Length: 328
Length: 176
Ligand SMILES: [Fe+2]
Picture 1 (tube, each protein chain N blue to C red):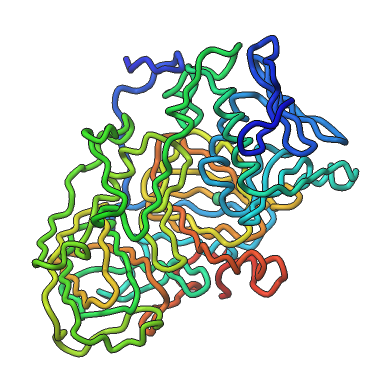
Picture 2 (picture 1 turned 90 degrees about the horizontal axis):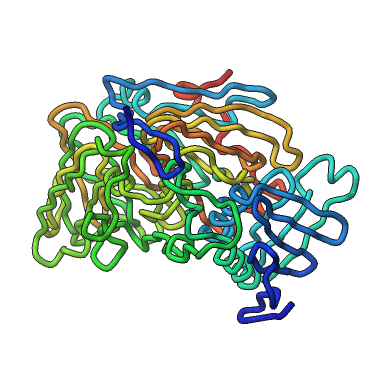
């Protein structure tokens, strides 16, 4: 094993299937035709490689997001905004009771670069981990090319709002973002804007539904507008959220189109708490002590609304703020 | 029939997107296994707007000081202003936004939420925006804005709770 750029520890040679092996602290990662093998000092774990790559893609793209990204019931990451825990069994009641859970804390750049290297090395030309199952070929098999363009897509993050001059711009055919096959019935007209001279930078509007209809990724919230710490993070969803998201704060969902069903479990133990069905116009809070996974039968538009304040995880964890949003 | 997909399967050749409106919305809900429905504050924006008076700002989501408000737009609103950016999304119907750069804001720079202005604003006209369903606009900090909707429309506001934000959780949310 050799440490290369950015502290990524990667094997000098590839295995029989053509893939490199990686290390991060005491964790080891290798893949073959069907599976990823994750090892740590007290245990090991296997996951389907296609589920693993879809989860890894989200964790990297979201820069570890808010709270916990469970790849499945055993393995995942928890964001501390500057450092990240990488864990096995930490949020699994049986592993905890057997004292078999294991966790390491790493500086964010180290885990970020390691995960990006794994994603780049293990994603073949046939597979796009951001796409829905209908939109991509398979992740299986021996090493066969790569799909760097897909796995390094730039994440949209508006500074004020999409469409404001100098900020993130709308998506068009010309910018290589065609309307998705499941949103061909979405009206593509942009708002009519009459600006007085001198106010070109502040009189701004865009077609949010058209913007979302042209997203080429699934389950990837991106910021379209910001009011201080209030972030509109809409996303288009199809098939299954590839991770189980554990909250460190209250998060809100506003279903903009179609329907998603959510399995909601206790964040720490995985015990089932509820099942939420959301249809267009529905608004639902996800408490700060749950984890959830969503199912979208048709590509749908979901507005994820976050409060990005750095103070909230501590307020929730210490019990100074409740785990649910409103008292009534 | 259908279109072959990259997966090897076949998908439909056309899909219909379901959007909600004042006249037509279908509400989901929370199926409780071991929890309290109130922790989810589950509501539907179109249902809230269908029961609101014009221009009432009804909170449908709250995270500390921040709120999302559902607004039934009908006729012409008051002029309002905030000391921070706000955003409006038109979810049904069509709405025109008028913007005026105020000569002097009545609000402290760190004030949260919007307030109504008495009468007409004093300042320079900035422009007008015509929003249809799915369109989002910036309501810039320090500007006065006024909406008009010839027929009932539904707006969602991204803002901070202010003096006119209405909290009616027990009326609008699933409780059991
Ligand atoms: Fe989430």
